[in-house]
Image 1 (cartoon, rainbow, N blue to C red):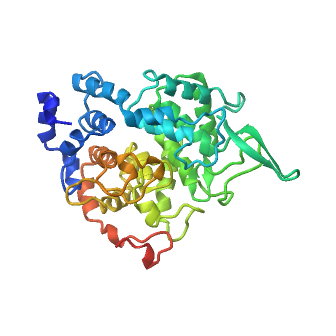
Image 2: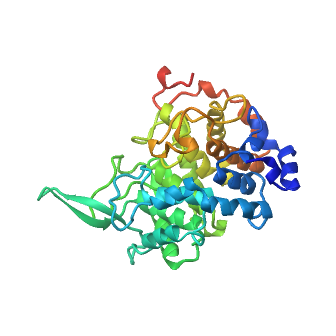
Image 3: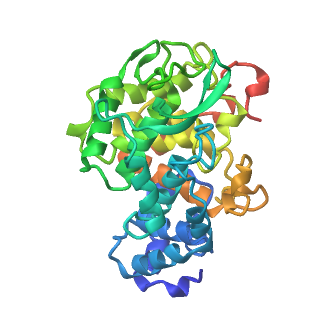
Amino acid sequence: MSMNLFSSEVQKLVNKEVQWVKLLPADPRRYLLESNEIFTVYRTLTDLFDLSPDYKDVINIYQKVLKDPLVNNLLDNLSNWERDFVKAHNKADYLPNQLWLLLDWGVKITDDKRMKQAIDKVLAHQDEDLGQFLAFIEAYDRKTKTKYPMWSSALCDHNLIVSVLLLAGLKDDERVKKGLHRMNELLKKTTQGWGWKCELWLYYKRRGPGRVNDVCPMIVADALRGYWILEEKDWPKNLIDAGKTLLNCWINRSTDKPYIFGHGKNFRLPRAPFFWYNIGTILDATSHYPELVKTQAFKELIAVSLIEFPTDGRFIPKSIYMYFKNYSFGQKREPSPWMTLFLSRIYKRAVEIDSKIIDSIKNINAKSLKGSKGGDKYKIK
């Protein structure tokens, strides 16, 4: 987009000096506003410039978001929650992931009936007694060696679904309140500390591959991605402790790695959209909580994430989902405005919470930090 299309106030904001930019090799704000990726422009205005949704420029750009071909492509291809089996929680066609991405782009459920209908289908399937949200799966009977459809649920489903519903603005919905109560009661002590672990699926004796009493880092991250919407008084007592347990998975990576959740090359290369265990996912999930931002683990992860930024401050993806090959973050050739913005707003949150964090991060030798197994092949070069 041309800068001439924005008001004089926005044009002045682009040139205003801000502290968080000092973390990057160059200021990306003008690049983001001039991007043809309209949802990135919208989120730049609201998240980097803190402009109100009622501001004229923001209103105009949001109307373009709703008409954008890339946004509508995803809306037209939303998974059918009542028909499509959930095959894995890290897939791009897993409905809660799709909804999370649309909400992150700024799409409101009140403004698109496809999104509203998808949310309504998710809300319609919940265990009335426990409050746990359900997903449509293909179960397997070992005795008869046959497969059959059923509504079940893993915490991978439930915690993310509740966070998505919170981000959608439904914190006062009674079903969401019941879902939160379920999340709260399943927050418990694990081998690594307070957190959520992989529980047995509801109505189906199956659980994930990790050790029984280990924390599941991804389930913790999914919970943190929604709780920040609520007032602190509505958080479960040990929520921040759970966040510290998540960050300690990084600190203790060479001695106590949760099964399948490593910290090597795949973890360290930010991979959008941030559906699964990845440095971007963890930084985004924890960056809303001041106590977590001030930890050594958070600062180290920020330092590692900054390694991949070229001198112009425009992030080029090196790990992608092929499902999103038509989006800037689904190719490895050119800078991605969305990924640049996604990481930039994490840095902005962190610096606004702790103004001293910039010096702390710059004093970290990120390239010397080894991966989960500690060997040289896990060392960033």
